[in-house]
Image (tube, rainbow, N blue to C red):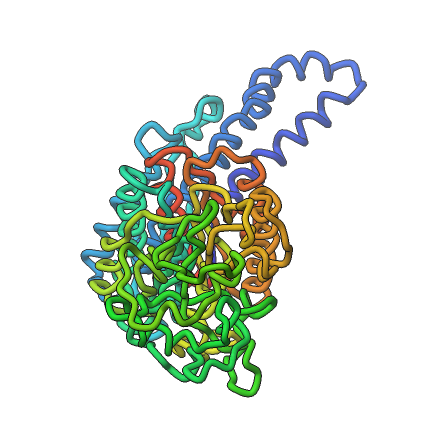
Length: 508
């Protein structure tokens, strides 16, 4: 955005020059000087007081520049606006941002649309009534400003990574839907077709990629990943186990890959089984002891507790009540990048609140939605200069893996059981496991930022200071972190993010 200011500097230079001459005269020491100086004391006082008027004029110029910048940006995002409508829109923004109570009155507003170079120019003047200079025949000072905006020529790819856990229930999920729709409304309003694409990653303890990817090559249909048989004896392919169960199919959720692939955009490859994704499968837990997800009869007699849980044969021809292997798979499916507003708005409206919080898993999939590689392949290359990639990450609470005093050490989550150390620690302490997830969250944010993704973070009614600090550190800059204690603050956060993204698409 280029800016040019115009002020009546010639007149002011003349005033300053005259004032300097009078001050030199006042310092003279000849006898008749005192008498003569007394005669010019009043105009000298007037000229010295003119600094007050100059200060008013400079303040008016600052306010005018801010108002014109806002007006130019408002016109700039409207790609097919007529000159008449552009003038009306600019006038409305100028009135809203430079109101009558401000210093000076606005005049001579001019809006110019350069369709060849795709630029918008907005200029105006502010006429300021003087206080002191009026005594010597200068009743007004006039300042001018011109703003030029280059319309957006860069594409924007945005993914919203949004907490859909149980604590978001009730009015909170409704507030989140409303704020998300506000963001899409602002960004799609006036956007060129194909220049804007938005995706959505709802997350809870895991992420849902959608059942259409069942047995996709990157979903490890051959059971090569060591994660496949982690909870089964004899070793088994999870896809095959799903096939043996009579009344349960895969619901679309996936588990975190082994560290560091859990948060990174490592291309899946059959040659490196740890890079493949595996279907989420919450095992049937023991009939004995304190467990959260016991849905089958172990029927193993004297076998020890862990052997009873790992018994692969119990799933054959099984009829399951409850969530079964889908226990913890609660989030709606990911919506890949799309330029169709209805598609993303419908996905936002469909969000639900259930499950526990696993922020790093959500961020990892947010990166993959923006990626040009598998699984979604919809993003532009990360090093493409004319594409802005951005991510909004929102949570309403702390990362959670519930520790348990049993052989699994925890409830099942996107990182499996805590006993297997897939989150980076082996512990039955909920606090220790939460801290491990926090560490993966920070690592995920750093990875996203290293790819050039602009990361915005939001906490919604979060009381934990450590979580707020973590989310602030996750953002690309501290000023891109928004703490939202209320619904109105949440809407303001999404509105400011939309405004920032709009401004980024306008070269200055």
